[in-house]
Length: 116
Image (cartoon, rainbow, N blue to C red; front, side):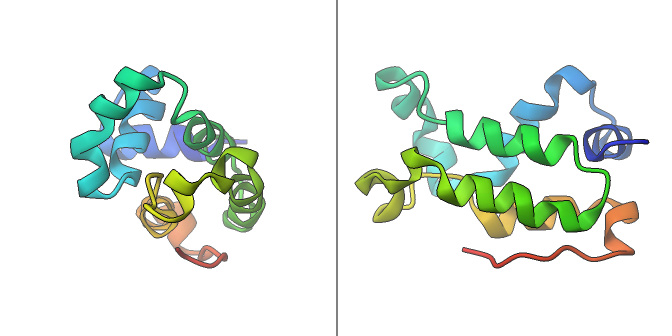
């Protein structure tokens, strides 16, 4: 069964090994993209919860699997920090949802889950 990552890479013409990085960048709000290099200078593992979220999304076979990936991301212990909760220094759930919906196979079935 084909995965979301395979469909996304095919649609966007990117190699599979660049999937995580491309999706991370596209899921970050613009203001976060600008300061992400600075954040990574101080903490190389800061975006680990996002990469775990992206890994969960990558292996989805059905759109309704998004809600499980989303639940895991929201419950990640790192997302309880002040930086992530108050400053929203994290991936945008609504951006991630839009990325998933941008793949035609997933659009046909719709994606469930709340946004930011």
